[in-house]
Image (cartoon, rainbow, N blue to C red; front, side):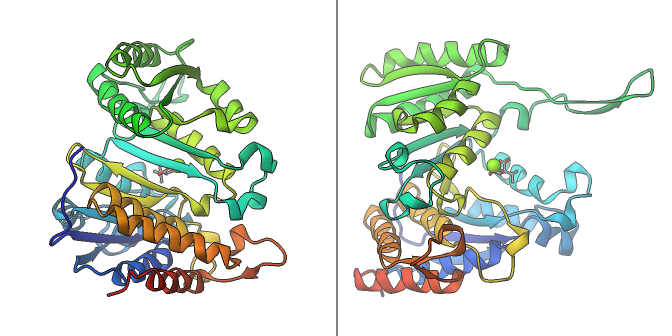
Length: 366
Ligand code: IPM
Ligand code: MG
């Protein structure tokens, strides 16, 4: 994947629903503290768009997204829209956006910050030093496979169905991303499938295996998804890069997130072949705490850092943001999701302010 330079970079902010607007506002503050001129735009997606346009991905949003280099998204969804039919749900807006921009490669790093070792529900010795990269295929598989739907059988009973489908080329392109990432890391790649049962993942395994001859420096292993779910909580540090399909990646990345203490810490990048990227926290819209200033903005801020690294090539800036986040944590500041007694409980805005303050001290300010 090629990397663009920052000059005139267009950034689109899609706050979305629930805690989305609060956490994106904090990332926006971080962005404004960087010594660059970006073109920043905003647009609606998800429930917020349904309210105004009766659709979760309005044309205007898609157009702005197509023109943007980097898209930063908060979260979509909420109980208010749960009863809507499938094509009108807020989540559909996100799925359509991923598909329309061809964002097939979803990178979900699960990194445990030493400061948060006590926040994990697993024993410190099991998780300390954890650094896993989950590479999830994002525009294929059962999420998009046809046919799909609900039909009425002859006996009057309803039957619902989805199709899990992958072509060799779809498997190859996501596997290449994973092999290349592994080459830059600990050179270990684990491909996760259910090849003991599903034809689609038999092809997955065969294709990844065949491709591995091009990456002799990477040690490739295969694991069934049920075992992978177990190994992630038993001995997560055995993993370096994991590559898997859309549905398994959705599930395993939430599981990996919890190893790090809170899903409120996990960023993600969704990339297409030209390094255009959508960056979003792995967590959802958390309607239960929306509007209360309690959400952890760090996953969104760290997603922005990923965007600066992968899409804009601003590695130094990405490192500065990441180190500002570490410093805010080292000061003992904690949003409720990562709070431990004895430390300072802060809200969304205070956490964002702390990161900006640290960033300025590191020399990142205009
Ligand atoms: C995620 C989310 C989405 C997904 C939902 C909101 C459609 O769970 O990004 O992991 O399933 O991909
Ligand atoms: Mg998910």
